Length: 538
Image (cartoon, rainbow, N blue to C red; front, side, top):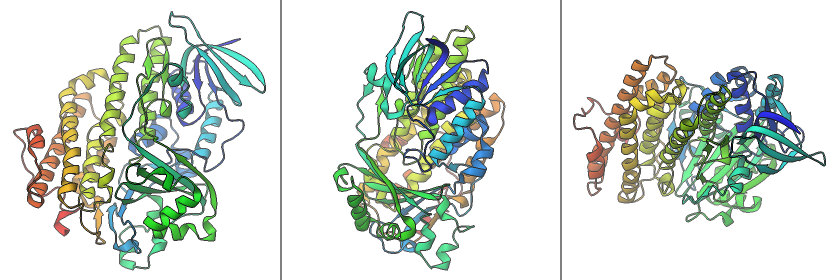
């Protein structure tokens, strides 16, 4: 029987990054990671979460200090791109949202097998004990201040470990969630089916139109997380550094049932109907099929993720919203940061009970706000009129508040969070009314207009680009609070402009709920915030 300070169940992305973060914060901490897999993960491993965005990218590159690996062994991401092209035969005829040049704050596409093998080696060098071929069989929690006990099988032998902390990072196996009956119903009924194929699926190869190709400088659409969108669904195209490509369908069950895509044959038939250019690409010999998987009702919630009795859940073992804006690594970063802080406080002899409760409230609040971006929104995804505005709104909401809170190192600063509470509540209230308003606009617009080949270039929106750049500003607490206040005022101004656009185009849409949330002293901008993106060219 061995004792340790922290036992992490699962040696995947969430578990290994937590182990590294704990070692950096408190090098003397004894940490044991139990990983069911025996041997290294394969390249292009079967994992959800291959695309990182600003919070997750900052966590990996800055907080964990892994930028050298990311820059040398992973792919620098060319942002998100969105195409509205259900059944389209030519991609240059589709409405397109994205940037013509890289925005200042970096993110990466992650070959999860390659990344997790690197993380495991890195953790071992840092002094973390990683036991592979270790299948957890029983967890006995002690709520009276004693050590927890974990039983696991390794190489045919039953072993036991006593530990002060247990952290479930075992993904959808959800060891503690199942044991403690923490599953919480989730009404977001979406499914996913995806494959890995050899080679690079490059949208630029689908067109010979030089004008269209030159919209991006350089011509590297393939490095983006490409979203091909239609009513009730979207498809991802994500390049992997092992010279493979991830291709996935995410769809609303009510519009595109899972049984229409839950085998490789059905998957290909579905693509032939809705995305013929993707289907044609995947038939080429250089894109040989590697593997296929599907997930039913993948979005899930949880009743509790942190406990004063020294256990926690992180990563997909806890909550998972939706992959549309790639938030998986973001929630790993936030949750691991809260868990690391609680463990370090506890091992230093400090009380952490209050933090367990507050951090859980914060994480659940961030999750619920994120869910509003997706819940009941899939019918909008094919609307080339409304979706460009929704994408700009959703980005602005993320970059105005949650991303700077994390990237400034203040996601666990309760003093700053307390002072920002009215501003955070205003942002949340604006978003809560904006999402149903976008749905109402979609319905009133007759479900949009035909895609007409425009590029909706986010790089040309100067205030938007500056919002992205300023994520890395180093500010005092007072300066930071003023910045967040200004960001949310910008968000409110954007909301007012969206209301004006809807009022002009669809006068029957009820705007009263949004108008009630807008600050009474809000000044309209001298020029349209959205003009470079959308409606001046409509």
